Image 1 (cartoon, rainbow, N blue to C red):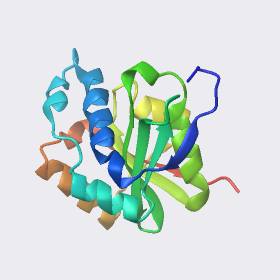
Image 2: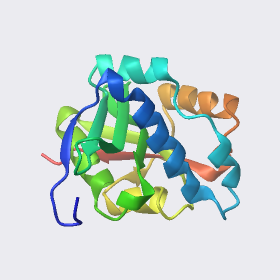
Image 3: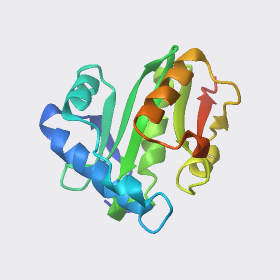
Image 4: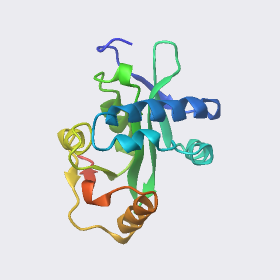
Length: 169
């Protein structure tokens, strides 16, 4: 896929779960050389969760030239909004706006999109801010529950921020 070719987005299939997990693993390598390098060793999203998202339409992929996934967005409903659980792009497909395309495709389905990400990592909160997401100052009970899930997984929530993007009518 060239940098100028529009991404072909489609729902993920069950037979692509291993590929989605591999995209997540390879995407995590971006953290090598940062003080978050330990994230590279994190286990990707488990197959059961991916299968559940596929069943509810919450896992979308961007295809490469050969039709196989090169990026994905996993989302679920939280408080009537679309919560982006994971967004990953294969490193050799970075810079093609695949993440932005996946987010744009999700937007019409929800009044707002939510996510949690690292505050100071350039391809995290600053990237989402460029796409129109804003920091949520006061967390709702559902977002506090997600924060608790992150803490249980060992994420440093002092370095993370929740963000929201309202749909533009």
